[in-house]
Length: 168
View 1 (spheres, rainbow, N blue to C red):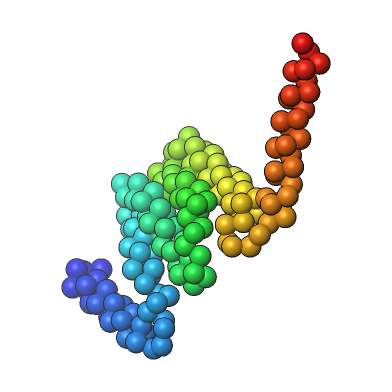
View 2: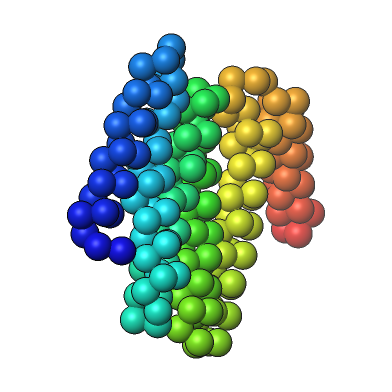
């Protein structure tokens, strides 16, 4: 595809996006597309560019994930989820690394990418549970965080004090 045609497609897409933003409050929610689009472009370039461009899968997946997180946060109004959404960026690094390894025929890089992606997803889930259900980040009081955790802390403290006393 020649440079003039590519530029034309990009300009038409941007114009359509700006036009779409004029309808109601869509602009309030669609701005993350300006982050998603370059990420997707990098991913397409990684797939189309052969082995020499395979490394673009890593920044492409990171930028795309940041854009998707921002889109979900814009739609829900929950920007406080950055407290644990960063785990998805770690996962995106892993997915990008896996894609890089797959596109470049490097099994070790692909395996390392899967490990990193898994770690990121575990971090996202663990911190998500902690911040949403223990602390009640979303503004909802959590019975787990408001009653169970303090009682467990008190119980653990009493146990340690009692254990020290009987050991002496």
